[in-house]
Image (cartoon, rainbow, N blue to C red; front, side):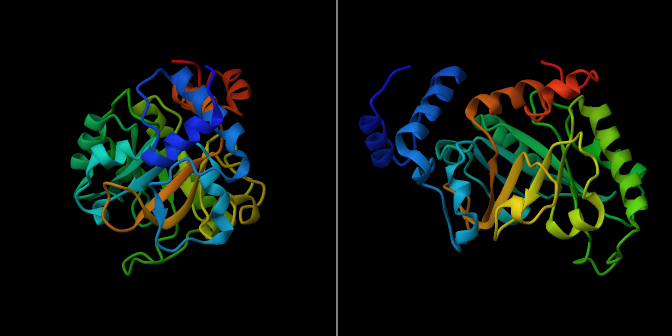
Length: 287
């Protein structure tokens, strides 16, 4: 695809977002070309913002593939507007522990699907429930949809919980995590993503589980500055994002790579950088 930089950048500025009903390959070429035109300062999604922007994460806006994650706390969502703002993916809170379902999970799940926003479900781990109970609950409440993004296992300490504030020994926590990752993959047929924050990564995950893609929370610095020896696939860079269609704050996230690498992820459910190595193990094959 050939185009003139000036005309496309002007169009993006006027319209707030590029709306393209074209094939994936053409869209990838377009975004790559725009990046070349605009250099390091281009903001791919000018209609999106941040109520409290932090200079330490400014580079996040340079990543062409961006999305959000949500739960009941965002309230009703206008999914057509979310899609129109250029949102490439959403991860939706589904379950927590062994007895809680997010109040808006099915509404959000169905709404995102109807609007054509690629969506995946996440499970928040509760360290005072057995992994067997938690995965039975996840399977009971999350659709096994072959078109969905890979599931996410959200691992953080439950310090906010009065009923379960404790931290487990590293070996015990890892054993639970491995079981839940295996069960998620068995249920969905997709390699799960691990979401975590700085503290839990340092306590439990550092130098562990390299065969899984990682989604890292870092809202004041780039992930490389906060997570030792960890290659990231997704970066949650703010919790005070502003996105058309969502009322108030929403988490915003960026994918590390290019549109072509995103297409590779969608076709294999694995981090494209790890695909050749994992494919030799019989993992992450093309759909």
